[in-house]
Length: 225
Image (tube, rainbow, N blue to C red; front, side, top):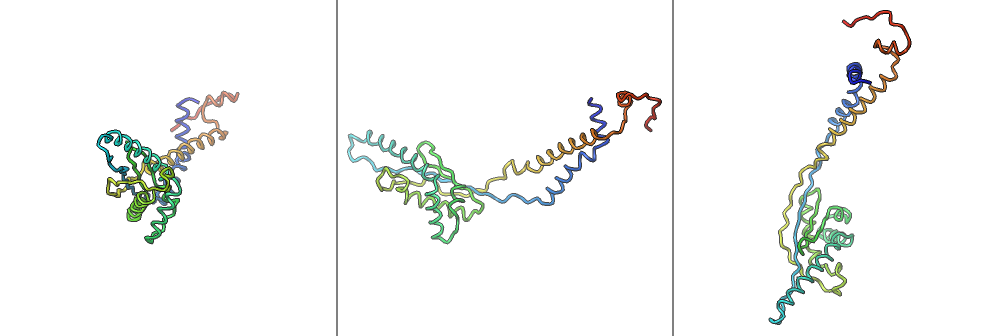
């Protein structure tokens, strides 16, 4: 089918091609709800080590202190991502009268080792609850980190919190903004396919070439107005 024929089909079936897109647009506008706000907060921690007692071993001791700190941060990074840490934070929040399930904590937490610093961030839909969640996470991390470091034989590593938690709202993602236009585009494609299908099933002969291809003689043509 030539491009001109496609254009003629669209001229005849344009309403049929647009109906699915119009239905999706009307439904999307009628049921539209702005996405709920999402907030994020992040805090960095560093492992504190006592200074060396002997001056002649100061440099060597300092090296091992830094090396030990890196190992501890790596271990804590894995612990923070696990269910045990989320459960401990949930219990800490419950003691404050806040009901936040471990799954919500674990699903919204991220942790990474950045240049031997432990950086954790939390995401949640309530700014006040999120601030309490971060305070509880910091308390658990500082006071109960022995649970995540069995190699220390029950001793608690010394962590220093470098930042004060600041809750920020996360802007709406690009996906939520493009959801309705993408659905309209799909519906438009489906409408065009439907129009072509109806045209294919229509037995009407409209062009001289179609009549000749059917093996019928053309006696005359009635011009368009």
